[in-house]
Length: 129
Image (cartoon, rainbow, N blue to C red):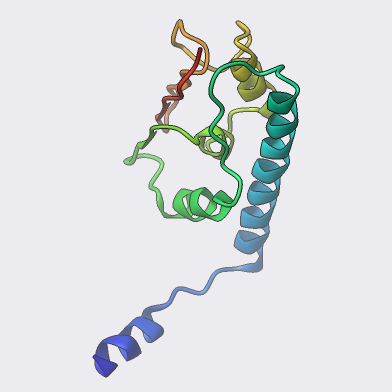
């Protein structure tokens, strides 16, 4: 067991300051977005279910670093606003989707079902009204 731990410690990848900054900026964007969604949902401006991503920002930041954009896809079930933001969907488009507007980011007919086909495919499903 000790040998395994030593090997893992030696294999740790060192990340650049730029990578840490990118992670921080993405996590901050997601947190601020979710705080606004929380506020709007509390004011009943966003209808239906709203599964927030607060506290999970580091998950998608790290995941995005590990994914190979030419080979991997990202699929999630809900608590997915952060995923959409992480693959480059604008905050305005995600918010419009939550409001059920046609300017939202979905290619699907139902609001809150986010599907964003790009070179890096991101399929996100959320429960909506």
